[in-house]
Image: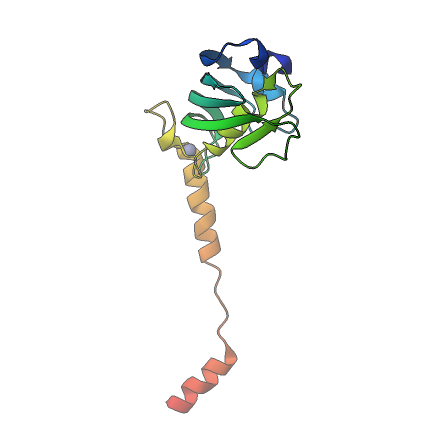
Length: 176
Ligand SMILES: [Zn+2]
């Protein structure tokens, strides 16, 4: 998949009830986003759509990996991601501005594009800390050369002596 329109769901053609959609996400998905926070990944997204008269419930279930830099050693790792999120599409005569989970559509809308929802859900599922120990490759450890380099530069910084406060020196003399 490499085009935004691949993520269009033509809901107007669907009967009331449940419908399944599956999307296979790879690097081409992230390339569609300008300044994407993620460049590379492999995920499967399963959408369960429940169509009612003027309302649709979309449940997104996704699982896979995204490529990112390790916070500690900067090696590129495949980070496992999974999640379950929902949105509600509501059809109104005069659609209001979307508020969080509810997206309002007009009576003439015939399709809904799920690209932005999928992208957002993947981004919010990214853990705050991303290190080699969380990599999909369970044997992956932080780059030893980089760790060595980092610990050496830290030692250098701690060797810098902090000048003593002259006022404190005076006070010490008084006490003595
Ligand atoms: Zn690392």
